[in-house]
Amino acid sequence: MLFHEFAAHLERLEKISSRLLITDEVVVILKKLAEKEIEGGVYLLMGRLAPAYTGLEFNLGWKMILRAISQLANIDGDKVMADFKKKGDIGDVVTGLPENLFEGEKLTVGEVYEKLLVVARYSGEGSQEKKITGLAELLLSMDQISAKFVARMVLGHLRLGFSDKTILDALSVASEGNKSARRKLDEAYQVLPDVGLLSKKVMGQGLARALSNLEVEVGVPVIPALCQRLNHAAEIIEKMGEVAAERKYDGTRVQIHFLRAGFADGTAIKTFTRNLEENSLMFPELTQMPLWINGSSVVLDCEAVGVDLKTDKIMPFQMTITRKRKHGITQAQAAVPLRFFVFDILARNGETLLSKPYFERREILDETVHKNKIMVVDEKYKMDDPVKLHGYHEQFLKEGFEGAVVKKWDGNYLPGRQGWNWIKIKESEGSSGKLADTLDLMIMGYYKGRGKRNGFGLGAFLAGVRKGEKVLTIAKVGTGLSDEDFRELKKRLDKLAVSAKPKEYEVSEALTADVWVRPKLVVEIAADEITKSPVHSAGVALRFPRLAKFRDDKDLTGVTTMNEIEQMRK
DNA sequence: GTTGTCTGCCC
DNA sequence: ATTCTGC
DNA sequence: GCAGAATGGGCAGACAAC
Image 1 (spheres, helix red, strand yellow):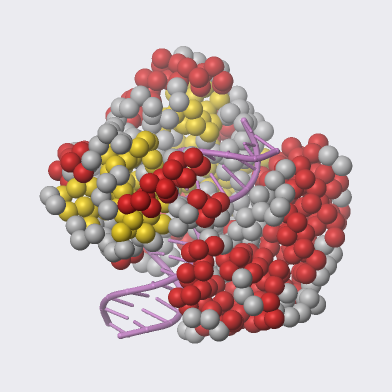
Image 2: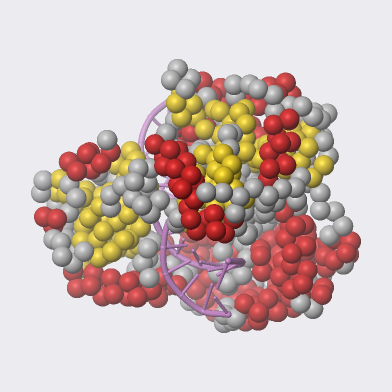
């Protein structure tokens, strides 16, 4: 398939909002791609070159892509940057270039994929220049519409309203004429989370053969179960019936694959993140795993958390996450020893356990992990009483955890946020754990938005606290606003706009706003935590900040002060 | 050798 | 991570 | 309710620039 034609389909998709019609259009693309091109073509639709667990990335963000555009069109970098800010989309920047720059409609999807692969693989000294030049040349060698989508692919988002789940729908429609095979495809995707390969199999071999193996393969990551969110214990029990409560740790999710006989590369342990990135080198602790495991192979699901071995206390997330590294691992291990709280088992001794009920998997888990200091089978508490559940949630919060994760007692292991087998409790009662109080912050400036937000002219705003005469930044806020809120806020902030940063604002360069506003508008901001910050001038920042409401009743004197922040941190 | 910028990926 | 919205 | 697309703080790593 010519890339030119591929891009024409994407151009059509851009105008469709109906999910059914989007799916149909994706089906057309899948059917038109040559068998050799399907894998690569589908990855490109995802704005990737390969599944996450291969580690193959473009390493080209919007700044570098803009440099490529600046180079290919011989336009000043600042102008290209301004155009991107104005349009909010890298593809639209390409479309705005002179048409005669672009020539050629000859490349196939397969050829474009290969060329992008070359660009992605440049590394080492001088590689950034090579990538920029390589991308610029590729863009110039195609028609403008194609170039628009290639630029978006490199950035990682086509922004056309479909992603991997829609590809699964499309595979079902392509082979069955309807979505009836979607469930089966979900199951297959769960144990082979590679849309490209799955698409190739389904389109090439037919559904039956492609879906013949739904077993977990040790060494191949499984799409992990994630939690839905609900507000109240009563609601949860009503939905789930008999449940188990577990502690929610603020660490990093690890899926551990152990093969006693060893993988092809000679190692016995592979680990994967929540997003299926391989991170086997991060955890030297696990080399002792053969001693702990009863079995020839297992796949475990757990949360790794830094622990202070003297006090046996859990470390904060900011400490734990320093373990996400590939250099200086030995020193990091000494500074932040990890404990692995195991809460599920997905396969053992060649048997896939995903469809077994939770309680059975937990029984198997108990038999599988011998007692040791590093890998701990997480405690669970069975119940069917909302009052009890609420009590455990409160208890876990008091103990310093993130609250409770609630699991359906007989629920199977579902991929992603599907179904209602795993739920975390939103702390809406306003007690400990989550930040108890909201903050009243001054809006200091705003940033132009991308995509849909570009239409509002505003994507996020900078918010600050008061310290004497000064206003210090403590958060950027870009969520919690409805479309209507965005429109209204834009109007109001433009009335307050000033040409230069007000002198009482202290703002690090990295947070420079696109538009500054004078100190007038106060907003109530909710957050989960106050953390130490390397960039916000308050010295601290809000974790997961979101707009709660506008506070027109307040002025500068009502804005939260640094003193109050210090109090809140205690 | 150090610092700054950008990117990817944890939450 | 949180949140909003079209289907 | 699903799926997608906006957006946050902040960590390490890779390069580039100094």
